[in-house]
Amino acid sequence: MKVPETEEDFVQWYEDCWADRDEVEYPKLFGAISDDVYTLDQTDALQAWLESDLAQVQELDPNWGPLGVRVAPPSEQFPYWSYVTSGLSNPFTVAPGAELAEDAPSGIGYEMVIHTPEEASWPVFRLLDMMAYNLVCLRAFALGHRYPVEGSLTGGETKLNGFVFVKDPSRAAEFTLPSGKVQLLTLVGATRNEMAFSRSNGADKLMAKLVAAGTGYITHPNREEVKL
Image 1 (tube, rainbow, N blue to C red):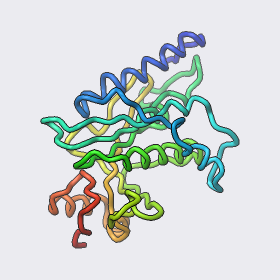
Image 2 (image 1 turned 45 degrees about the vertical axis):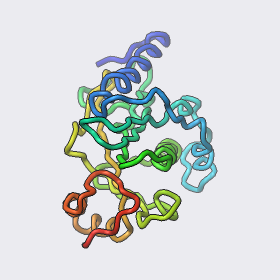
Image 3 (image 1 turned 135 degrees about the vertical axis):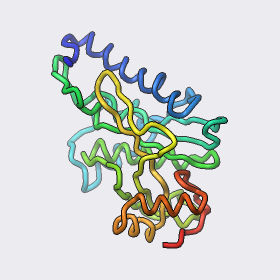
Image 4 (image 1 turned 120 degrees about the vertical axis):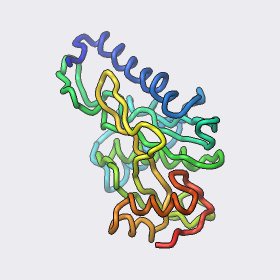
């Protein structure tokens, strides 16, 4: 597939891809989505990573500011809150007139989602920070990865210290935009011991234990560590 060549057509195509994800694919995956978008330009996450030793870019791309996190409230099909990134799969990695391979990823190839039993602000801040990390440090995530955080996952009282990246069997694991394929990475909160178990035994074995414990793919900050 060839990306539109003129600047005007490229901008329209870019916006159409964005709308296709947020207005067509996300409602199919999560149900009704709130109109509110929590964007990177409302935080200092990008600047903080730019000033870190891990930064791989010299300046921030103004196109990153409007990227953010969207929220899906509980529904009959999905009786929990979902927080999903919006923008990592935008086609900012291609130029007007470029040729796209049939199996090409859109943007960096994925979006991230966190599920919680109750409405909370911490998933929004965590996802925004991780988006900024991806963009500024040029480091991508993938299924099976683990991501420890400083302190606790929520910033409050919890035994969870990071995430494991898994495929949620309750919904499609990927979708396709005009700009390419997009994976949906589900982030599940875990303790340090659970992340170590996942590293040694695989994320599937950890998830089997979490499912057996009753929390599964939904992050319950007040849960106990599973028996490993």
